[in-house]
Length: 232
Image (cartoon, rainbow, N blue to C red; front, side, top):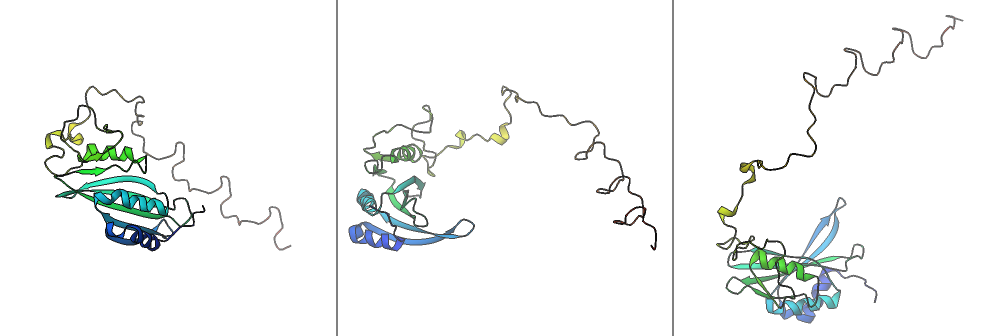
């Protein structure tokens, strides 16, 4: 089947027809990309977590999406997950970016995995679990991804509440300075000669104007052949 592309408005209409009751909010924005400000369309939508798989399946029916990442933010009472997708990826000037926003209440931070539809999503879902403290239900690989094994349990680096990074965990590297046991640099810095002005070429005569040919007689007009008698 040939992929011809659709506008953001046409995609929104298709989703409204197939799962409109699941779309809590939608909006379309257009931004100029690059130096020539090429218009690029963005479709944003809010859905309940119970409808996430249904809405994503409807998007797949339009065109199988490219998943960039699932980002997340602590919004106070909720943690929001943003699924950043694009459809008609690779078709010149036809790509449309789609963002699905799902809000999770902090007393129930669970969301279904989308890895059954987009297998590569498991990596970004693992990151959200350890960074935000959510639980991705039925994730095929629940292991951590970035934090070390001895990282304190119940501390989530991206959270802005009491479960976030504690002040005593923060290392102010600018105040710590260079460790005494740190190895010396492999290449020693080049030492500057004593008393030598910086940036001045070596051996250049003082006071000599630049660009003037050497040995040219003073006051001789340019372009006049040598040895030609005057007035002849």
